[in-house]
Amino acid sequence: MMHTFGVGFSLSFSLILAIGAQNAFVLRQGIRQEHVFITCITCALSDALLIAAGVAGFGALAEAVPWLETVMRYGGAAFLFWYGLRNFIAAWKGGEALETGGQVRASIKGVLTTVLMLTFLNPHVYLDTVVLLGSISAQYGDKLVFALGAMLASFVFFFLLGYGARYLSPLFSKPMSWRVLDVIVGLTMWAIALKLVL
Image 1 (cartoon, rainbow, N blue to C red):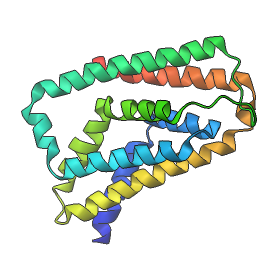
Image 2 (cartoon, rainbow, N blue to C red):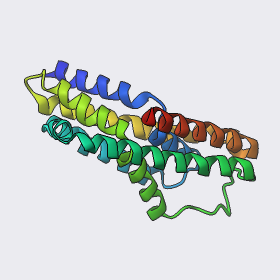
Image 3 (cartoon, one colour):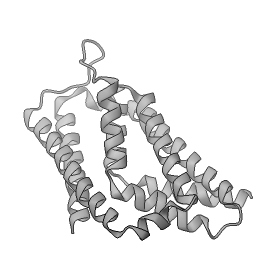
Image 4 (cartoon, helix red, strand yellow):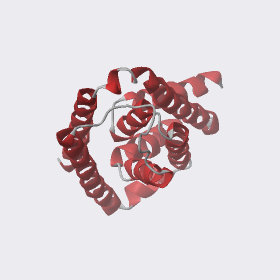
């Protein structure tokens, strides 16, 4: 039982670890110390929902409806291109620095919308959580234990990333650091979008 839990945890953690659109946004929110809890809990709960769907057999539906993957792929690529462009524009304009007072905060609604779009419009999320974890869980007798391990990995990772990012705050008191981060995030988004299209 503990072995199955550990496999679910370690596999899920390793899949999330790669830098992607969702992780880049969580990192940014953590550095800004802006709506960190709602960002982390939304990412973790979304992953948990997708992992549950995968373990319950939703991966078979994705295989049964072949056009679904194409729609998700191009829709996700378009969104990632747009989000990357926003980061490049922010880098071009510059002027952002981390300040403890007087900082204009994004609305919770805006943050939630962005998190949900970065999560559910990214086909890689479905491939990792629904298809890959779902198919691997079938190899274990207790799929529920496997799923719980995988879900816990999401919670641990996103909260470590979101709240750990605050230690980078002194670095991001300089506007140039934000410009560099925006360029890196923009390039990451465009690289993922290009990979999806190709």
